[in-house]
Length: 257
Image (cartoon, rainbow, N blue to C red; front, side):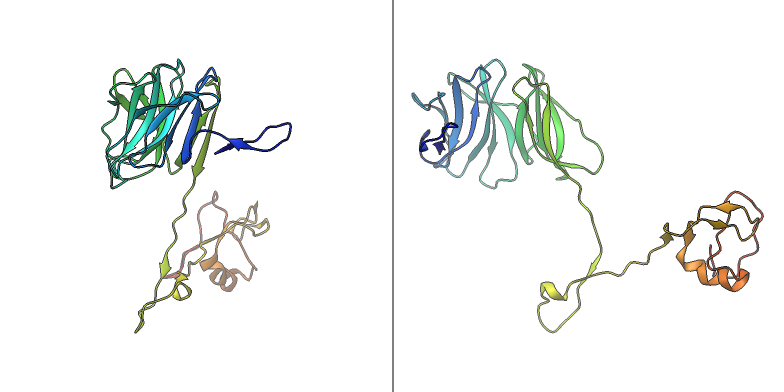
């Protein structure tokens, strides 16, 4: 990692080799980070990288990511992942060192701890069924978590401004579609996979026309499957049904509006 002066000049080395996930304290005097060495050692240093002190190191194949300062500078929150990297939890350790404390018992993916104040910690994570990730809030005193986001949006990361008054989040809106794979005498390739044809049921782009029954001008919102049937019955191209004026003519067997 290197520092680049804003006024120009050559970059210079910053922190130790393999340092990642750097976070500055609220007053800007200290930095917390971890390295990618065995156990992901978590360290604290002065703002210029000097006087680095190791706070905690995990077991071999254990990962410790996202070190984040508490607003008062007393704690460092981080995510600890076991070797399988699928069941993680939030932890914290005093900025001066000591034994780390486990804050959650979720045993699922967590990431991006973001303190709002001395008591509230936001983060993104999956639920116990593996759905998500969603946006969560943790009360660090009672250890109670609650889900903040609802719906289909997935929160993949979150961060707060220095004054904790604004949040920035990356939100994904997944879309599911049906695809078909042919049964071949060999393994199918990506080119063999095709989207399943889907019949468009509603057509919203039709112009406004008189109703075929009451002649009242209505917005054309016609079912594509019934246009041929309407042309045969009324000679209109295309006619539209007035949804507000019953009665309607009897429908033939198997037809629909």
